Image (cartoon, rainbow, N blue to C red):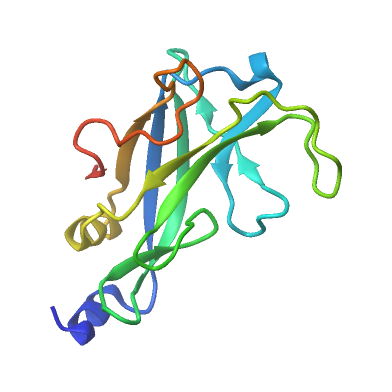
Amino acid sequence: MPKRSVQRRLGRSAAVRLRLLCRKSLDPREFGAVFGLQSNETAKEWLLTEGKQRSNGDVLFECTCQVRPNRRTGLPQLHGPFVHGYADQRFLYLSWRPTGWRPGKPAPPAPGWVRRLKVDLTSITPTQMRRAQKGGRLEASVPGTANDGGPSCALPLLGEGWTVR
């Protein structure tokens, strides 16, 4: 698809809502940790936005991203305070960090399982982005617990991956 026609359809920047469900997540308080969607605004401060805990153990995270054409390919690309990675490798981080950690202070002792779950965004298609911009939202689920019993860190999306609702 020509770069110019993608830019016309997307405009300079458009918003897309993302909803990510972490299924059966471990309770971070039991381990002296904080669990949340990691901001990319500053790596030094490792800012986390906590999700909404559900009664069944799932945790829901929501954010809004901007969609702009990739300068090189013209294809839609996600940007925003929670989007990490290079242009062709976008992802979100669901991160665990020790409760007492503060920027500029020595890190408190942390259990070996403190992790980050990398949630791939590259499987979102241009068609899905356009549909989500028209009043929908992109949704996906990830497992909350890894095979070793600790927090997930590198597992694939559950079900159909990213879908538009």
